[in-house]
Image 1 (cartoon, rainbow, N blue to C red):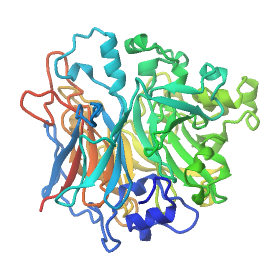
Image 2: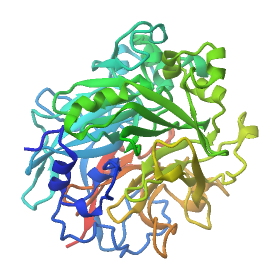
Image 3: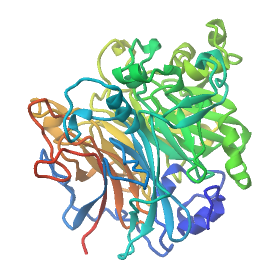
Image 4: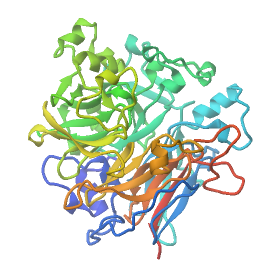
Length: 552
């Protein structure tokens, strides 16, 4: 058996794909778990040679894939996971898998939000304690056993005693890092629940990270001027306990919120190592006019230490990016006098991270969402979803002119993830000319093609001249990062009405593309239900995980 705290060498042996990993100091990035565990002789992944016909724009209530491919639903909101009756949550977002042995693996899926009005049985809009509990319980994440079925495909095993939930209602999670136990988190060393779970990442030592994004929608935030939701009235908890990267060990079920990585609308986390061996974590803040961050540990990553490397995420320096001058600004009062003058210590930086970044002079960006490290070049790719005009319009970066979003690329000075300087460029701008709009999630294939999902606003009827009218439903594209087709966008799939795709991930055998379909029917009104996906008929729409493969 390969334990979760597997070494890099063991993991590469298990996946049989060592040939695609660059030599040198670079860690196996988060994308690596999304590539094939098949023999190394398998030259290309499912989308490796781009031999599919680009799908057309669609407004249909259907999941559209190219000719020669088919989609299968693997999990739906509400599926019973274990004998205790715990259920697969709503709004499935980030997904990943981790090997357990040659026959089984873990599947992890985030649950970001809940649409109570789309649950069977209806909802009259009145909050009760039971409804509030359901709202919190259906967020968090699901850990599910994977096994090969009779056809040799990896599939979830439901129900199974190994399966479990982390949720927003009852799960106890330690607070770690400089803010733990301080007045900035009300003296607490433990939080109850994890909510607003958007993207995520994998640590090099084999644990899952889940990103708490728009926590203010449930718990409010005095800094943002946002009041708590009615659900929080039944289960009052401090807003300062949410908005972190949460690390979970699926084998032991131990969990910790890493305050050292900052508090904001975390989209995901992507790891690398500095040339001197220190651990580096890149993160984006999914809010208009907010910033791009990286964390550099004080100590070096030691592969042989396994899960003990978790301590690296407790002590280090958090930086915010000045993308106009190409420099990382330390959010450390000892290095940035403006923070010390404003009364910040390291603990306060961990909780009031956005205010610290602005005091340091970081660049406001166009909703920096998913951040991924290129597996060979080490460049950092950033989904800049869209600049939304408003009070931050005067701070719009001069180089960022595309309202339809863009994909940025950051190259660290000297190729060292621990550098203080970098170059920043736009890799693919959004717009009708490129075929890209409002990029959200990013992932790499073993061939270094970038998989990109979109997330733009949809309505029951597209507005003339709007993004939805021009691009149809949200979609998934493949973008080569090298070669003659580099930067060219090819549309692979289109989501059902009202939905977005989340977290494209290759299955353990590399033969399928797994992707979450989130909030179908999300554009519904009180009088018009726009989707019946995936069950059809008169059923209510449900978020679901699907597997896309070639027809045989």
